[in-house]
Structures are given as C-alpha cells and as structure tokens.
Length: 275
Ligand SMILES: [Zn+2]
Image 1 (cartoon, rainbow, N blue to C red):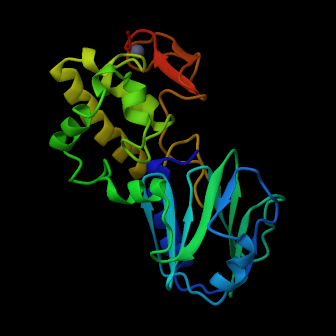
Image 2: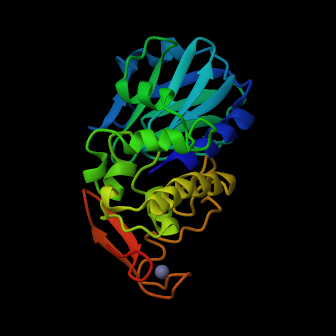
C-alpha cells in the first residue's frame, strides 16, 4: 500500500516521465472491482480525459494527483500506478488505462481498494482528499513540534495507543500501518503503548522519528516493500516489515515479532520496544 514516501516518489516520476504527453485513449473500469472508486460514471472518463496533456503531478499524503489542463486525476493509496513504455503489455486487470500520443501509457490497478478519480478542478468534494490536501506533511516545515503538540492535545489523543494516534483518522495523512513500523522502532516505542503514558522526551523522540524516517524513506525512493512507477522496489531497507520478521533487530539483536493489532499487523522489536 502506497504511503506518503512512495506517493512523493511516484508524483516526481510522473512529473519527469509524463509531462507533455497527450492522452489519446482512455479505458476506465475494464476489470470491475467492488472497491474501485471513480468520480461519477467511469464511462464518462474518455470524454473528460481524451486530448488532455499531462502537465504536472503532486502528492498529498498517500494520494497522487496528476494535472492535465483543467482536469485532475487522483490515485488513492491502494492503487498500483505503473508507467508502460510503448509496446509494453498492460496488466491483465486494471481499472484505468491512459494511452498517450507516443504509445506509452499509465495504468492504475486496484489491489484491495482504491480510488481512481478524474474530475474537473474544483468538482471533487471528497473529505479524504480535502484533509490530505489541507494538513501539513511531515516533510514540510509547517509540521513542527508545535503542530505535533496540537495533535497530541486533540480529543482523546492521550488514551490512544501509539499506532492509533499516528496511523488512524487521517491525523497525519499518508502515515499508515506501513511506515508506522519503522517510525515507532526508531523512537523505541511499542505500537500498543498509550500516548498518555509517554514522557516529554519520548514524545519529542516520536516527533523526530515521524519527520526523519518519512524523509529518509522518500529520499531513498520509497520502501523496499513497495514499488515505484516503473515497478521497481524502493531503496529504503525496512527495519520492521514482512521482509525482516523473525530476524534480529539491528540495534539490540533481539527478535523482530509480528502480531495482529487494530485491523492490521504490527511489527516490533522485543528488546527495544516494550510496553
Ligand atoms: Zn531491538
């Protein structure tokens, strides 16, 4: 699942790869998927998109937004977004395929769920999108300790676990159950630990980890558990993930464990992260 670092990387790749390409054919909802979401009727996408030229791309949290004239195409965080050079075969199943005037294409396919929203600028009233656009990114200067403290002072924040605080309610858009793991490990905080039980120093360490781990992941091209626009894994080696579970913690040598918690798996070091 794409999260903030991968969305940053893919938006940059789209900007440099697709700028100036004109959309010449559109195939929307080719493989109907119960949890693929569109803006309005996907049958209207060809009329909306054909003839538009890709200008730029940006990321908001885990969302990737492509600008083509007056139109915006937003890919949600559960969508695989791939660039296909001319003559490359698209995947068997996809929910949005844009072909360009040089025969290359961009394809979006939904894994478990995800949005492929195309709309005229200003016509998309989706709260998830609005929140992702409005809130400061951990990569930006506005996300400072004062801002983090305001999040900590939010309703019920102190009774939440570290996982619930960081990775739910779009408190920090694009910070999900994936990048959460290394952020908590870096701060040496267990996912189940209650926010209200953390000391001032621990909270500061948590804030610093949110900033530094996110920035490092983005700088390295995303996590090695996710793929970029070209289908290549990112260059950030995850410390806690499906790739490292059962192995040894690089800091203390104890075992990395996985357990189910709050509708997803959490990973933690049995030495460094104690409740
Ligand atoms: Zn450890």
